[in-house]
Image (cartoon, rainbow, N blue to C red; front, top):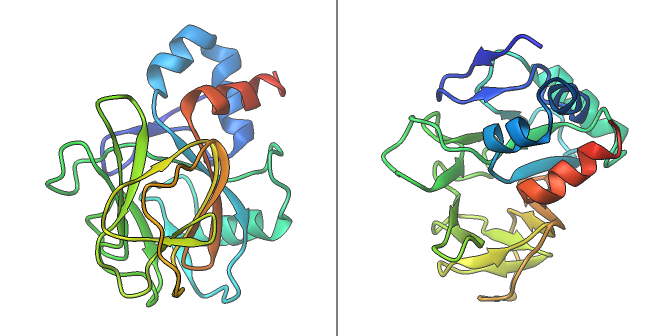
Length: 204
């Protein structure tokens, strides 16, 4: 499959769907695929209430219409599921943190007035565990429907992550592969590289 370099310099499969990644796995094999995509992923699980909101993964290979169409299907773990890689770009000064926000210099861009310019960051600790931190955003960051503070919270495959206003506060609780992550009214499932590879192998 032909690849394009996105503006951040990282290559993403055409269409950003599970099917596209599955094609790459068939083409390269497990070892080469794992070496190329050794970062976590966000799998789109639910659409926003307001379809005017949009996500811009900063790639020429997906449109806002395609994102909303994929979200409306609401079928998680299907070949049509939209995937966004939590990979570092060269659009900001953070060396190792993957940023999420409204501004164009973020690694994951969500164009919604409810999202702060720099809303949250994902980072991998020395122990290999991934963490999410709210950057003092106006509407907060949710993990499994519970708000996190400005201290990093562990995330694992299977966790839910969202951005909205809540009253409760939690810090230090882990999230895992399969949990949900929400940016504004888009709901994502967080999945580490190993779990994502396991998902793809079901379709190969």
